[in-house]
Length: 372
Image 1 (spheres, one colour):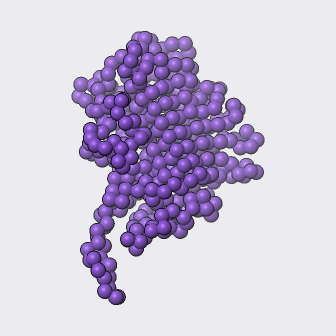
Image 2: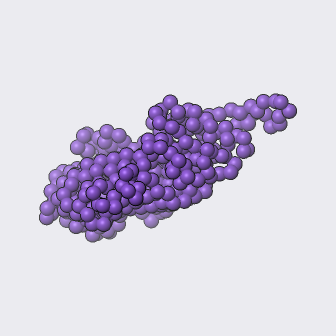
């Protein structure tokens, strides 16, 4: 089995090597499936700016890492839908600066990982903040921006197709960010200074509060209590659906104080394919939890008020917009909202000969695919 896993890792690197310009580094902390490095932090330290790190799924924690140079990190998936369903799990990622501020994690990309905490920092002189970041197709517990209350902006973020429990910041200024087509529990981002950011085609399942200077469009807020949408400033709300399981919203819930709103649908059930807030939360999904179907389905029924109601004529919520959520499985499955990263992946390995004579050949049949 050790030989087969090693072949698997090599093939992943070869299949994807034509898509990158800089050096490719393989990382695996699974002793039965070795990479060039077993420690992710050691591989990061050895990498050069713009290198790509392929981090194998192993079921083992890659620990806490710090990134102070622009890198591309590609995991095997948060809940990979294949015959070796091993996730790439990282406890925490800190995107920061070197001690002399000569280099930072700005310009990095992260996809296909399960992460507990992601933190974005600033330079020690508070003259710059981590910027130009892409997060896609991850399962993330917490994303946190911390600049010590300074007014320097975090610029140019693209956060899409993730399952996220919490997005928050410490009195930050968030500017030119795009957060779209994600499943998010709670959002509290940007209450220090003016900025501009787009929040579009997300499904929010708990709260949206203390946000500032956001364009909020084509989202579905399906929350437990009506008090969970509050304290937002200078936001523009357009063509969103707002619904509380308990309590009702005022008809002007999105159009108060410094906020403005138009075309929003208030106190109307969005009619998802299947969602029960009292079932296991989607950010708790694993290869074994929940035990069986039906699984969460945020596709809208034909009876939904959000069908073709978006400002662009597509559905409100995850499956609308210019880049709809790419589902990890077309069937009713735990993999639906955990798509694989956009690289060729070996999905299945079959051994055709169970015994090999001395000098013989191992016959291995591989099934590979690349998700959209």
